[in-house]
Amino acid sequence: MIRFFYAFIICLTFSTMHASLSAAGSIEKSIIYKGETRSYRIFIPSNVAQHKNKVAAVIALHGGGGTGQNAEDMTGFSEKADKEGFIAIYPDGSS
Image 1: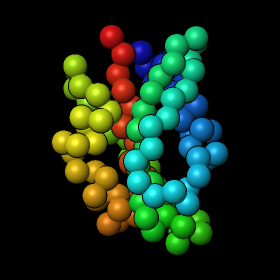
Image 2: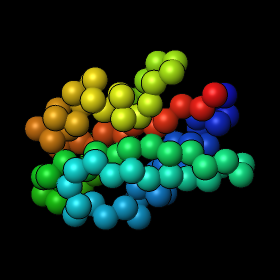
Image 3: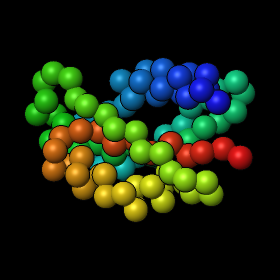
C-alpha cells in the first residue's frame, strides 16, 4: 500500500503539472497505475494564476467507504484552498 501511495503521488504530480491551472474549481481526473484506473478530484483555487512561484498542495484522504467527492464536501478544504491559495487533492480509495 505504501508503495502505491508513493507511485500515486509521483503520477499525480506529473498529471497535475499538465493540468490547466488557469481553470479554477474542482476537476475530476484519473491516472492509470499497474493497469488500474485511479480517479481523484483536484481543486484549483481562483487565485492560483497570481502565484508565479510554487503553489502548495494538500492531499485529503477519506475514510473507508468514502470517496474523493465525500472528502471534498465534508472537509471544507476547497473553500480554504480558494482563500489561502493552495491546491487541494482528493483521491478515491480502492477496495
